[in-house]
Length: 509
Image 1 (cartoon, rainbow, N blue to C red):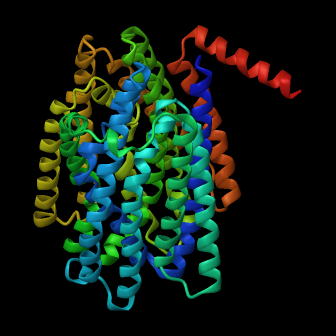
Image 2: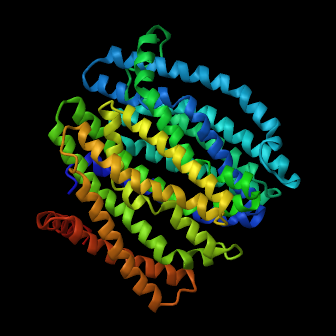
Image 3: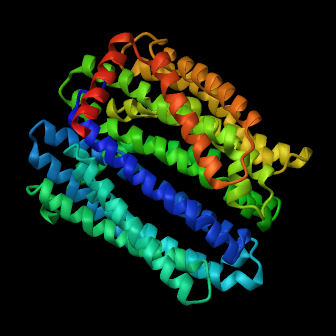
């Protein structure tokens, strides 16, 4: 099914990187919650969200940089690529320096802006200081990360990411074991791991793109204007993403309580991992799609999209079905001291829309590749405002509380996907508006069948230990893979896949 060997290598590396990250979260989250409490843990998610708010200031520049650099290189325009690269790096450095001062002000007066218990005030301030410093360093690192994208060698970024996470874990374990547990250790460890990513990205740029270097003589205001004028609409898209999915912890803190924010933060741990997996896998397809567009091969681009949607169905539907069916048993074992039923429901509400949005994730790249982000941005910001207005109304006039915060975005996300994103992506490629609906409906059918199977399993087997949970999830995953092979693949594709598996088994033997 996957004909491109480079794509397979990139995907395998991304999956391994994800498994490392999820394994770290699996062990560290309950460890941190048990040592510092869910309330303090909630401020980690809120700090990361605030750092994401700041990306609104830079998304116009950085969201389109890889697109312009990549197309210039694949059109053999090294001077143009150098201008884009140098200009973006220099501007990002200036922004990073300027961000230091408001970050210091925010940390110093943090307790005047959000609800923080006095006993954890210093801990939270130190945490936020490191998280914001991490964001500033990440601004510079991100531009250098374009090298693996341009050369379609994302596996190198995955390897660097795995090593950085291992560094982070080692630092956290040493600090939590040797000293009194505090949340700011997480901020420090994150900052150090990001420094490693920066060093790695600079090395990759020097190795993979030896002719592309930062040079002030290549700084070009025209190039900056071109990138920003295309990416300015992504600023609105980013703002809409904040409105729909990243204000939830802040709203819970301000309108309910910091304790409720902590519960919501814990409930988002697994959904965040699933969304990260989906985004990680989807990102694998972007380089080859961009290259196909740069070469004017639209037929190849469309074929890649259709194949990628089949693959994304697997990585979107199976994790959601596992969470839906086995989530209650998982949380009872993972965080037994918390309200596990509430956390399970909030988790489903936070991630269930990815049954559809995950499948069409490669279509989002179409807007960037074709440089048609304006309409998408306008629609997204309108929906973001509608979602926020609905949440505030529900909080004021109902007792839904956290359910209103977690569930509203899910409902509107389904509407946005079916009414706009699927047909508009087809239009950007001059295809019939219904071209990509088949993949979305197959995803819904797949989830329904898998959920039915999972419910049968969970109702007939009592799960009280980690071993029984893991064994049942493994059996369910195997059954799911078989079922999806009949729903998603043609007879020839199944035959090809079985041939590859048998060939692998013979080599193993």
